[in-house]
Image 1: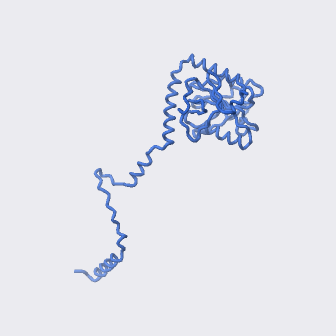
Image 2: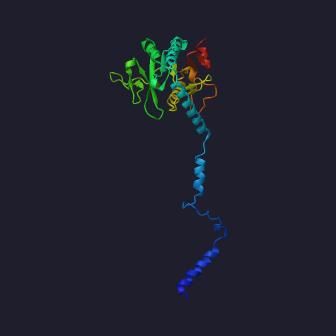
Image 3: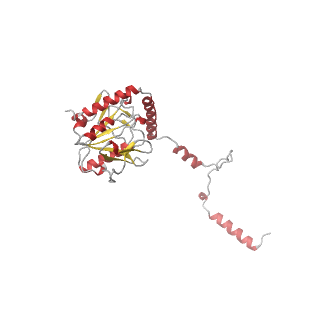
Length: 278
């Protein structure tokens, strides 16, 4: 038996149901019951599958990583006597090259034996002894690919950082800030660059931090804004670091080199490098 108030409520509900459009009622089948006790989440499962799929860029970075591993292994097994001979030959070629002799401002890396980079000690020493050459060397500021090139006037200006790699202190012995090449009054003529692998088309494989590619891109932008001539990008390479053309994968931020110096001589790549020999 229903009381009057209950009858009134039931009547209202019946009238409300009759007014609901038929297509408003969902007819989608319920998800299958879980056999593991975990709720069924159709949309999140689809998102997870798409987010883990490798992109073409991921593939290129993985190829670079694989090539770095291979080259590092070859450098580690390089005979010390051969390494010393190639260091001597490469530095002699640099010092005798017209593009080195004619430059007045240049940026050069400070070689690290632990990283098995081509030695630059003799080149740096000759630059610092020269009256009309100004040298800038790298200082890493953070782990976000931020690197500066600061002016030094002697080898003693270098100190070991946390990774035991030599770099300039931000201030000189008198407490004055060193000149940053990005704020120099004139252009740089030459960059002497390190790397792990190179080819004869100008591709360069770094160590994966992006420091040099980022810096070189910024400096090229500065040179364009100031209407300066683009500096020559020259890399130093052991014989085992030169690979076949096309082996080094290319990603959007990679900067190509103009010339490559190996123990066998200079390999000019761009027109700018070839013009230095005319």
